[in-house]
Length: 162
Picture (cartoon, rainbow, N blue to C red):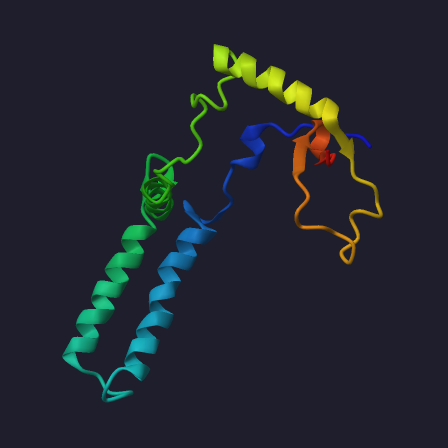
């Protein structure tokens, strides 16, 4: 299959519909019409003009028109989306790469002793057969060991009874 790289300048160009207005800007400028009608029909005393409905409509139009403005080549709406994503990102990271369990670059004496013990135990382990994995014959008292290998393989070993 043939792959063609598209330059970033081509993919980031916005289409201009009317003058300098893009489709999203036009959508943001037309949206107050629909929301104003929803307020006009849905709020108390439906389909009658009231001063509080006018205030809500004017405030609604100001919000949508301010979202359609451009700052440094981007819409204010996109700036707000970017800021909200930044502030809503996860701030608590549970994985610590520098923990003693995951720090493989600086082995300590206890790690070397544990490696020798694991090597001795691995020799005493035998792989499970397919018959042992059946649910009706599976013994919950087995001492299982799980060893992860490359490419997502998982080996299950059972300790031999002595």
